[in-house]
Amino acid sequence: MQVSITVNGQQRTDEVEPRLLLAHYLRDTCGLTATNIGCDSTSCGACTVVVDGLSVKSCTVLAAQTDGSQVTTLEGLAGPDGEMHPMQAAFRAEHGLQCGFCTPGMVMAAIGVLADNPDPSDREVREGLEGNLCRCTGYHNIVRAVQTAAKSGPAAGQVPQSQEERA
Amino acid sequence: MIPSPFDYVKVRSVDEAVAALTEHGEDAKLLAGGHSLLPIMKLRLAVPSVLIDISGIRDLSYVRVEGDEVAIGAGTRHFELERSETARTEVPLLPHAAGRVGDPQVRHRGTLGGTVAHSDPASDLPTALLALGGTVVLQGPDGRREVPITEFWTGFFETAMSPDELVVELRVPRTGDAGWGYEKFTRRENDWPIVAAAAVQGRVALANMGGSVLRATATEEALARGASIAEAAALADQGTSPTADMHADQEYRRHLARLLTRRALEKAAAAAR
Image (cartoon, rainbow over all chains, first blue to last red; front, side, top):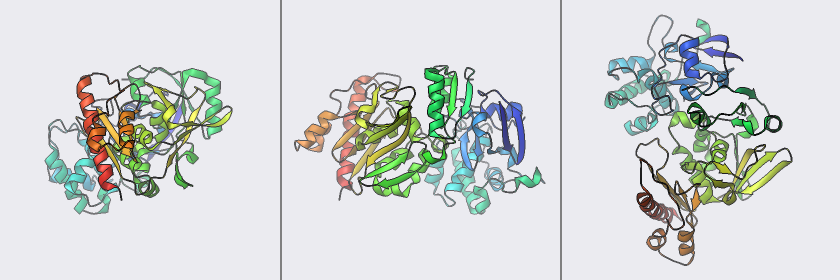
């Protein structure tokens, strides 16, 4: 079947099998390999991307279900000149990662946390990230990074608005 | 993990969904959020030949007051129910239970109708719905019919639905300021309940204490006789048939049912005005 999906601001049309998972579509069809597949069972959150403004686990979504949607992956966050998204910058500043495997999903989920609640408590950050596991257990710095991002302004809770301009 | 091949049909209305179910028969499954169905398809525990995607039916997503009831569209996603001001005011147990499902990403996808139709005995929202009572509204080739919630779940992944029907609406009584409690025991925050208990207005429902969500009838009868919360909760596991798994054996689940029922009833009593 044919799907038409806007990925990081670029509209694409691809022929896919109905059973193709969004995570595999992004990695194998689009070549966007920041989205990691960890548990492959909706638990770990490593594959989290943003679909039409909402964080989702792309291992449990069919590419077919996102036909006509806007999908944002970690690759879609930085500006055209390579300037990091406020959430990326905060993860860097606070060293919100150790091995880095959970980081793309963690960053995308964290943007969703701030989209819902621009000024969360530490507990609310932890609850908002309950669907993302860090096996290095680096949670303290991740929470600190989300708080740093929250203080940087509302853009930290949004995926880039003007992606079409780069398309 | 990749599901077996299937054909994918996207429908735009309930009538189209019913027509597709009629055409494709028992080999077809409805796809809404997909967060119960796709995991079991990836494990090849379910191998439908056709998926009928109903997520594009826009008029299935609503929460509104209708007389003494709150009507909720089957396509309402968990995060929408969790945040609904109408639901929080009129039937607060339900949005609370919606917020206990999985994690934010899961709640962004999963739908009320999906979790009701899936009939997993370890589900938050069916447990809350069973304690509330009310009606499941189904639509099939012969039109709409209503099934009392108490008669809807018939066993492990089994319901009173026919293969050519879909859930279109849930109707629950408005409970307003009535006290309620929902107690869920998990090993990890975003898990399914090992056991859960929902209590409101003297009714108690249990998750994962048998083949389907079920009512703690001995506890309810004791409360109706005027028994104390402690006395009534001590009967919560009567008539249940919990399974044993790596999380808990049967006796531990029975203990949890009694304990969580007591806590849920105490919260309901403390919150009642």
